[in-house]
Amino acid sequence: MAGPFLQKLTEMTERRDLLLIGIVDQMAFVKTTLQQLADKVRSYEGGWAHRRSQDGWSLMWMWRASEKVGRVSCIEVYLSKGSKKGGDFQRVSLRTVEARLTHMTPLLGGKRAKSFSRDLEFFFNEARRAVRWVNAFPDTDLGILVPKSKASGLDEWISAIAMSCETRSARAAGLIEKYLELDIELNQLAFEFNEARQPVRFRSIICRRECTALDPLSPAEPRYRVVDYFDRRTGKRSSRDVSSYKLRLNQQKVRERLALSLGRQPTEADLSAVMSARTNRKPTPWLTNELISHCHLGKHSGSINRHQKNMVAILEEWGSLRALIRALL
Image (cartoon, rainbow, N blue to C red; front, side, top):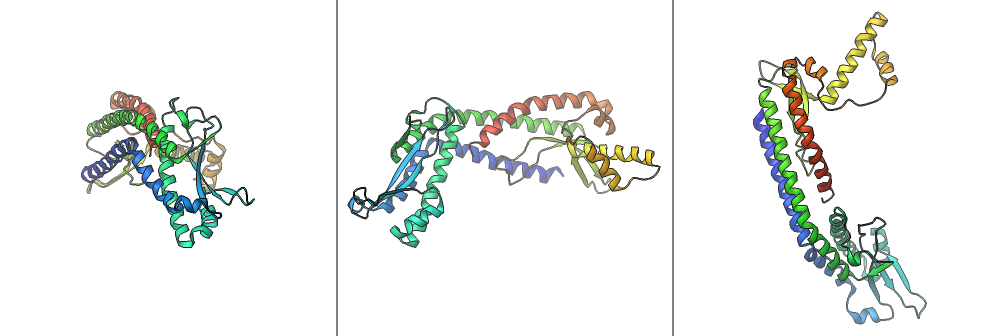
């Protein structure tokens, strides 16, 4: 059963590593990406002569300081049309798709307005991502990204945000390198624990990492699990995470006490009434001496507790780094 799991673990690890390495490169070269997307959006404006005409229009790019110290906000785009002399001047936000289609369709036509909206959304997606990269590492080196009131100029914003991203790319690389080092240590601890628990039997405790494709940072943290089904003939087994297993044990204890007090087997309604009256606190995912004894592993409790202590120490830093890295995605 180890073969398919190791293959899945390898696949998810390689996918994650490529993603993280790619983010560092994207941070370092974000200016080119933003500039190309911005040029495509600005191409819809046409020439300067058109924008100076009586019914001309233009895009105004502006940003403000973030409400949080050491952080930046994303740039916003507004449509300016009409003239102040003519009394029909307007400036409207193009933040939403609805606003873009409403205000740009009369100027560009339906088809081009939809293309404009799509291209602007592509730009905003990358711009917001760059802002997340900068805000993942709050600092005071933000320059014009933190104006006293507001500032304008798309090229100026792109240059400033790109410089901040480039500076932080080295910090992100160091953070990712440390995270991957700790991840390797967690893998080793999990494999060592499982090796020591061989052969697997009913109520064995194993250590496993979930490898879901939905999580871009998969594999997840190692979790202890209790084997709650084991077929000696085929070797087929299933396991339950410690939190869930503890909950089931607690329910079984309550069931047994109810049977003694009621003089009969309790119904599900009886059990539900008692459980709902108790403090609704989910059991922890960590091994206890009581659970280790329940699994007939009391003579190994010393080594099991030492392993758990080592893993908890690594997981504390690993989890903190993982949260920072997730902010970069």
